[in-house]
Image 1 (cartoon, rainbow, N blue to C red):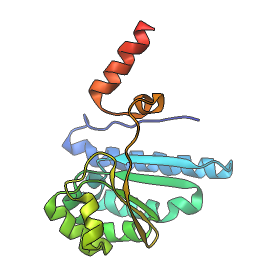
Image 2: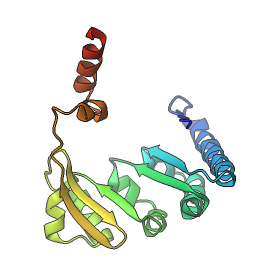
Image 3: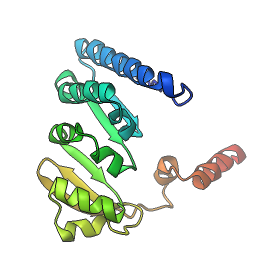
Amino acid sequence: MVIICFDIKDLGKQLKKLGMLIVQDQVWNRVTINRNTHKSTRYYIDEFHLLLKEEQTAAYFVEIWKRFRKWGGIPTGITQNIKDLLASREIENIFENSDFILMLNQAAGDRQILAKQLNISPYQLSYVTNSGEGEGLLFYGSTIIPFKDKFDKTLKLYSLMTTKPEEVEARKQKEMEE
């Protein structure tokens, strides 16, 4: 197993579009290579909405998203900026080619847009309205499942999975002391 992380934040405005296209091309090449060896490729895209801002990178990404699963790829788009994401014309194609969506707490304006776009009932919407940690909606195909996951914070697994900076630091301190 290999993890490759591309960080293009320091490229500047002029080179960012080219950088995104190069990353997308590298990922597609990896999917192709892995397909030939019967391996799956997981692709996590943070700040996903940024890929859809530029017409060329958006069009290329929609094409990748449509073909990815057939080639053993598992794309995951991550964003906190739903309005920016939904402003893209290409997002409808991506939603139509996504079997799984995990949605956490949403701002009021975003909830209304998402309710209309994803056919979410008012009751279901309550799970992403002022929701706490571990609460939200799962979309699997045409099924929407509300969830509340109260993970036991005393478990070792919790300390390994948490992304809260203060908890990560506390775990590291504890490991150094042991």
